[in-house]
Length: 128
Image 1: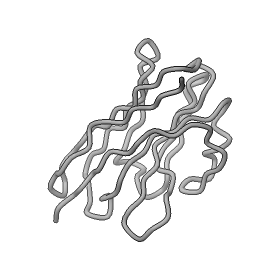
Image 2 (image 1 turned 60 degrees about the vertical axis):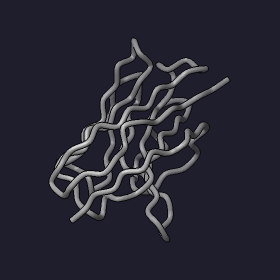
Image 3 (image 1 turned 90 degrees about the horizontal axis):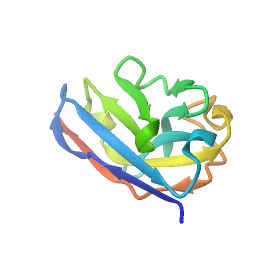
């Protein structure tokens, strides 16, 4: 059974940091691209960042470049999203998702397509 378990959300003041974790199981981690997506109230879900486990390529939405960093621990089948300099507009439910193959699904973040598996979200709230 494929599982993606996101954790690490919480309440933080503007300018603060959080690290999200996505623990994956039930599929061959190295064959997939893992991404972080978010959905704010009243808005569509958007892509934040992706990482191709096979070659380490990373992708970021312009809104988070320079503030967020995606990384992985392949031995633990876990992808992280380090979020620094958080802003109130980063407030959203954050989801991790996986797609088979390279990061082609994430080439035009925040737009994305074709993610195969989704986990439940974790709430990130940034207060001003």
